Image (tube, rainbow, N blue to C red; front, side, top):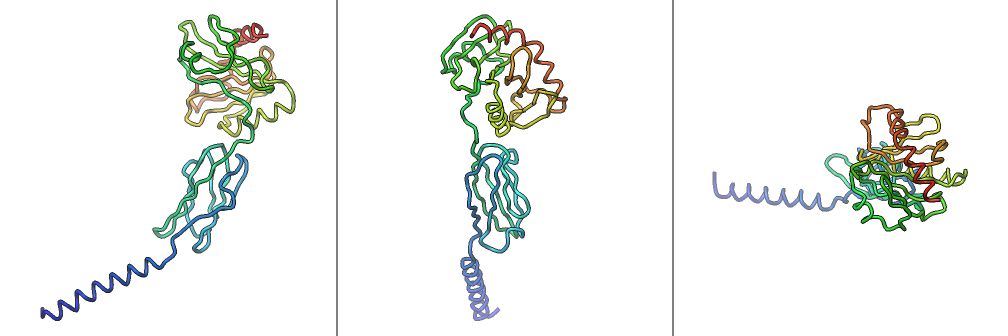
Length: 253
């Protein structure tokens, strides 16, 4: 091939590449926006794109436990936490961070570490210790919503097997307690006056019992059962610990 032909070929290739590069650079970068980057757990917000229509994109949520996004870019919060929402189309994508904030934050939960020793729990707890006896610990309540205190139960080997928060029995507190758990945990089901919740990563579960004859309106934290088991399986755990919980509560009064 003549040298001139080589020169023309190389020149055409270089300028074609430069032309494409300049064309890509001139195109706007996809960006997402929303009027609310912080919302409550039961709220929603619309995400917008700066190129085309939001409904033309594929939308995904990095954590659907925190919140979901539909085909139009509408985000619906489910639980508190941070999540990244992604829009994608024809190789272009962009992300928007959203934080779901709690509505109720005046309840400080127990440290949930099943199998931990008394000493380990005592090292973590900063509340005032009220009771330290075989099988249990009780700490002073730090909110008017909590009736007597925070309780931990241990087996004969000094290993934590359950925790309890007894709540003040009033319609007003019942409403906020329900919101507190709904915005933090997965709802597993209901059996009469008992509501069942599971921790996101299935590390533990809890029973919110609104009318327990022995311990009253309370939340009982227990090891997480198989997710396929019925809610009634959780309630079976209660019978084995109710007497010790009731005894600890009476001792704290």
